[in-house]
Image (spheres, rainbow, N blue to C red):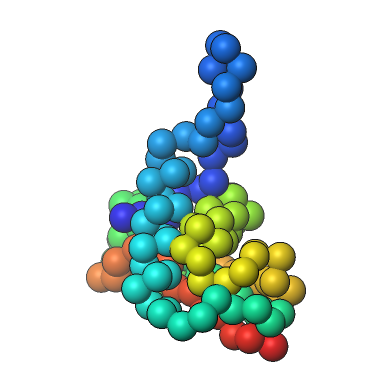
Length: 127
């Protein structure tokens, strides 16, 4: 599943607030992967989280003259919305007590290599 930016809460005509299905599905996928990657006690110390988003390379960057490696992505989705979706998914997994423990955050957003696949790479380090 490709990375999904955190969608804004929506409201029904009756005033009920809900999270868009695409966002909810992405956060559930992140939670499942986080639970399968870490089975210890919930983390409780300050954390440094690194999140690298590698998005699908568009066809316009598949020409022979284009770099075959990773290329910076300056288009939507916004990196802050991508980050929020991942952090909320990890929070829902129970991997840490609360995402307020994240005191340092590093992130990047790039297009994949010509022969690469889209992915999200997450590294969590207790400080």
